[in-house]
Amino acid sequence: MTFTNNNRHVQVIQSTFDAEFNDTLFQQFLAAELLDSVKKTHFFNGRFENLYLSDQHAPLLLDLKTDARAYASQIIGRPVRKMGCWFNAMPKGSETTLHSHDDDDEVLSGVYYIRAPQGSGKLIIHTPEGKITHTPQAGQWVFFSPQIPHEVSEHLADDLRLSVAFNFS
Image (cartoon, rainbow, N blue to C red; front, side, top):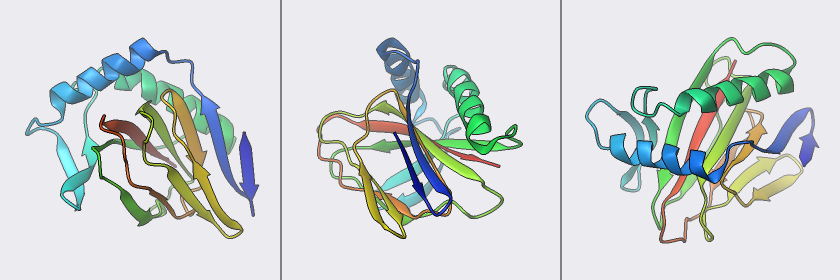
């Protein structure tokens, strides 16, 4: 499914990663999230929205980054020069406030869903034509323009919603 709005693209892609990959990456996240060596930023409403695990913390992150780089290069039509990523863990009651990712030289943003239980917060993308509301699914990629404001609605499930966000330049 592809949405196009004034040359800003939102693209949803089902990955080739299986449930075992996502479960293992989830376990790697849980084993590392509370370590002092994990950088945490964006403290809002009682939680850090951005957790920066290294490849040593979560070895499967290397495979995810390879996939991300390949998809992003295809979408932007050239090799990705720079890529950054962070985990976003949402316990019940969490939400992510409206923001965009156009701080530096970003040309594409994306998110990969590791866990998205029923009742997960929805990705809401604000385009000039209106809102696009996306229900996340584990194993799914969503790519969009970094200039597009977006947010995540309240996570209502008891189980953790876990994703990895990306910026590409």
